[in-house]
Structures are given as structure tokens and as C-alpha cells.
Image 1 (spheres, rainbow, N blue to C red):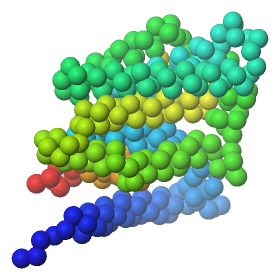
Image 2: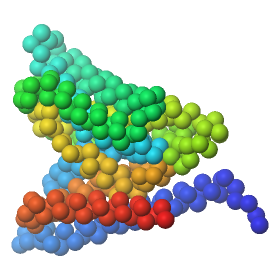
Image 3: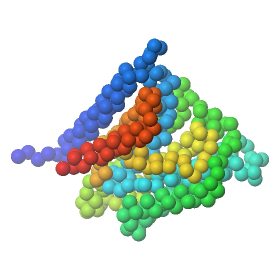
Amino acid sequence: MVPVTSSSHRQTRAAFWAFREAGVLGVLVVMGAALAIATRGPYGSTFLTASNLLDVARQFSFVAIMAVGELAVILTAGIDLSVAATLALSGVVMAKVLTLPVLAGASVAARVAGAMLVALCVAVAVGLTNGSLVVRVKLPPFIATLGMLSICRGLAYAVSRGHPISGFPDIFSESIGHGTIGGVPVPVLAMAVVTGAGWFILSRTRWGRYFYAVGGNEQAARFAGVPVDRAKLLAYVICSLTAGIAAILMTAWLGTAQSTAMMGGELDVIAATVIGGASLMGGHGTALGALLGAAIMGVLRNGLVLLNCPAYYRDVSIGLVIVFAVALDRFRKK
């Protein structure tokens, strides 16, 4: 019997994941075609208008950005339940810095750049804390990040005192939140950049290979010389960093920051990665798959709104999609 080389194994695995992404893309295309027909009226389909499609892409871009970061953690067989709360905390801290009276004399560009940097630093700090609790304290990822979820929500409430923070410079809201480049909204372009960066890190760097190795078999990865603890720590930092990026974009888009931002959104983020083909058991998934998973959820939500579906049925539909995706993940493991 001819042994299978590591090179051929990698090629087979790459072909498998390419097929899986094609399947997810096929679901998205079929869903879009069905909605195009269902929303057809006297003046054409309301779903297929350029303005609606760009609006849908902008709406799910925040989930997609965080899903790429969440994927890094899930690849290591971990999970981050604090990702949406990290977004809320980063957003209110950034908003607080932007509206500080003591900085009123500084240039607008400097204030915006400084506030955005602070938001990213807050997010990285949360990621380092999550990773340290998992790696150093040896807490289960579910418990560590569940506790951090509550901590971040509480801190966000304390910083904002329970009130929305607004009154940002026009350059922040108009250029980042509502700005476009070549007709494409900035959040959508940011989503494409983050997805591309995620693809590059996971498929073209040694740390990306480490993530897959740790999730595939942690003990074997240790014997192979993989720095398992550092890989896990980096995965949590990347996850929180994407939450900080999403916080900047969402705050600029909404023109306000509040402690309740994206409440429960961690479920959407995790579901997007699983729908896109990631395994909750670790070791499998791609950045493009996470993007497609977020797109499926975004298109489904938009379609249900256009069809005037009651809000409670929308929640039921999303819940069914999440359950189906997780059940499919478990079925693949058998």
C-alpha cells in the first residue's frame, strides 16, 4: 500500500474545504434567487436593488468581521462568548474619549485616531485576559469567556452610566460609518480586508498552521513542537481585535455607543462560523467560510423583513438555522 504524503494530504484537505465553501456559496445563491422571486413587484425585485444589497452587506459586515476572529479561537477547539461584549466595551470607551472636553482643543483627526487606537487597545486587553485565563489559569474557554462577557458588559455600563454616548465629529461618522469608496461602504471594504487578512494568516503563516494543529490534536501538536499556549493566546487576541475593529465601524455607522450594543450578538458570530463550515470541535474552518456564513444570516434576516414576516418568526428562523448548523457540525464528526 502506497503511503499518502503530507503534500497530497494537504491538497486533499484543501480540495475538501474548497468544496464545502462552494456548497455554502451555493446555499447563499439559492437563497438570494428565492428572495429575488418572492420580493418581485411591479417595479422589479426589492431584494435585488443595489441599495438593498449594499445595505445588507453593511449590516452583516460587523458580524462577519468578528466571525473571522472567532474562527481563530474555534480552530483551537476554544470558544469566545465575550466577543459582542468586547465590542460594546470598546465602543463606549472610544466614544468617551471622542467626547472628552479636555481634548476639545486637539485636532479632529488626532482625536479620532487616538480614540480608535484606544478602542483597539481595550479589545486587545480583553483578548489577552481571555487567553491568560485559558492558558495560565486553565479555565475552560466557555467559563472564562462567559465571565468576561459579564465583566465587559458591566464595565461598558459603568463607563457610559447606562446612557448612549453620541456627538461625534462629522469626519468620524461620515467618513467611516457612512463613507464609501468607489460606491462601496467602508464597513464592507473593511470586511473584505479583514477576511483577506484572515485567509492569509490561516493559510500562509505558521501561526495559522498552529491553530489548525492545536484544534486537530493538541497533544500531538505539543509533541511536534507547536507552541500551543502561545497559539491559543494569539487566537484570543485576534478574536478580540476583530471585535474592536467592528466596534469602531458600528459606532461610526450608528452615531452612538451604548453598553447594550449587539446584546446576544455572540450567538450570531459563532453561528456564522459554524454555518460557514467551521467545526466546534476545532481544526476545521476558513475565513471565507465565516464570511459566507455571516452573509447567509444577513440575507435571511433582510429577506424576512422584506416579506413582512413578524419579528418573532424571524427569531425562530434564525434559531432554526443555528440549530441546523450545529447539528450538521456534530453529524460531520460521526
